[in-house]
Image (cartoon, rainbow, N blue to C red; front, side, top):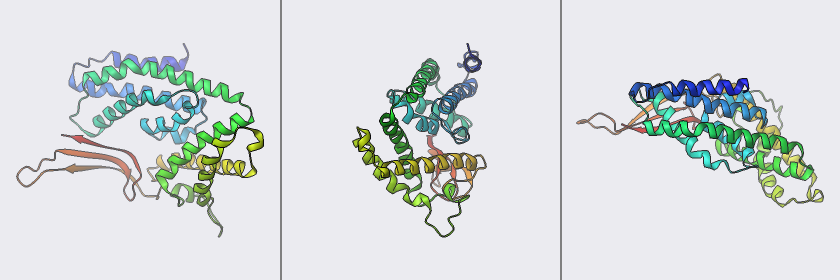
Length: 281
């Protein structure tokens, strides 16, 4: 057993030693399960998929899963694990933001029963991706890389839109020239259409390579800078401050107690969110 496997086993051992029949212990028991999956996605994402460590380690579980899925989809369908990730994300978020929330035993048992298989599945698929990507011919490498970075670009564009976000501006000086991010959407649209049509080396045009290179540069710069900014609680979109807020819903003059609360970690100025969840009281 490797040191990494021993480290993961210690986490599960801590969970297994807890008496989850006790309400408060169930709150504590989410932590080792959370750390287990967080660590699996961090290390496999970095070592086998080439993701930026600083960017990945400053994100929560659901975002790590989003970032690693494009690589795993090359090998297999990772969506069968979405329920596990969503359940664990939800339980962890509720414990962090509600002093009296205690996870149900069934939810904890479901997570515990599946995390080891999840780890093995991620290891096998990410390792297969790493191994097979080394043997790709030029066309296979081009189309696979285009697919992965097209998905990443789509995620960034959904977050940021077509104008350069703060994470692309705070260290970049254009000196009167157009910001390279302004071509990002155009390159994405062109590549997303073109790479699916390429089946032979003769199909590749110079513009295809240029679009892919530009997209890789923008995606990697965004990921690296996002990690730096989040570690300082700075919003990657606008440069505002990342804060935690609680928004009560419901209540009136006769019964002021809210019926639910939305817990949000995100920018105080714009729509950028790390996590947002509404919990019924």
